[in-house]
Length: 562
RNA sequence: GGGCUUGUGGCUUAGCUCGGACAUAGCGCCGGGCUUCUAACCCGGAUGUCGGGGGUUCGAAUCCCCCCAAGCCCGCCA
Image (cartoon, rainbow, N blue to C red):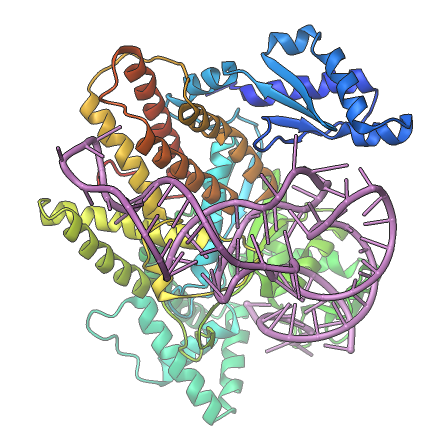
């Protein structure tokens, strides 16, 4: 795929150039032609005002000029006017070129860019299992990571471990003072949540416990060996639990970066020293930044009056390290971090470092209200995975009773994963959602399994077909519609990497599956003869490969049968 | 009180960055399609004040202003 150039994009660029030369207008952006054409221009409206002529007349005149243009002829562009609209219709040459790329492994991969990106996601506090809110972060982050790799970026994915926060101190206090036995079969993160919830109940009853928690925090910041060891032990155990959950979700981090390391290695102290020198610094009892001039009404506190650092200081140290080692820094964060993330970005700029690019996602809540680890009000990702696999297994058993149990379990695992990942990634991160069991367990239409099913169908046809000669040709409306959708894939990858909107890829995969399903019902493949059979098989091979690449970029298994 | 985000058929949702030709799809509803390459599917139908009101424009779901509603944030928590 190295050096692949999108045939559609090449043509679009030439049309824009010709349009620009023919009109002298700077802004000649093309719009989607919808049902009328592949591309369209509304430039006639703009010109009408300047030339005091009707837009339709101008469109007509431009058509006459452009139809003689050899550059447009060379790339197979047909131009015609429809009232004020100038419509461009491409011949099938670009589809042929796209199909030739689409049958090859790795279709959609873009040219290597030589840019190093660090992407941080999930980074949940290790005080209880990942719940359905956290995994929105994981799935957005992991999908973006896959897109970035496909788009040709060098990438490292990091999990920032908040191992010295108040929550962890509360966990440690709980383990020191309450019943801390792990139940039989209890996962580490669930165990920690149980102790954390119990500890919070105790604190509610007896607020003086907070003093003991504060002491733990001071000890850990000072590096008291016994305390550090206790914090590390519980955090590690929780992360072990997370690792299992994340693996089930097909989410992978390259590196876990521990917050406390930035105390130990002196980075935090160094960043505090630099911050002190900023004109916005207020170094009194606390060290804080006054970012009023940038529109922030509250103070950005860096160090407490007892001399300990707050989260912001360590986070600045972490980001400074990332800034020094990577070309681009991207964080996936919940919407509750919007303000502090903006303050962090602002401060990074003041320090002369790269400010992170941030992907924010809105909250996932339960029908009965927002989730809370502390109150024990959450649906854990592990529960969701268990339920969905059970449901998927029942479904596979009904549909494919002839398969042995192991195969059905394996399919159910992939289908369950698809259902979860797709359900979460399909909606724009900007939108808050309410977790709904019924919807999560639905495997029909606009779901991951629906797309997997389309892929499995294509596989089934190819398997039955045996070997065949590739024939790059599209004739019928269904064939053309399918080829057009396949041709869009590389530009979708490019756009997602640019806009950081992974749901666009989800929509694309679904639309490709839709169009293939329609094709499937209208056009015979295996029963067609000679060249018709070969060109349709080529198309099926292309769509199978494109669906596979799209699914895998979504972190979903492209299974051959289901 | 201030800030950020969201508001699109009964429900869920795309489009909004960069304004264009009858607003995208799913669920649900109504009616069809499995001796035919996997029916986790397909085809047809009904359903819309694009939260409300102003404005800009030849043209607004999209841009600007005001208002309403929901969520989040405004800590020497993370």
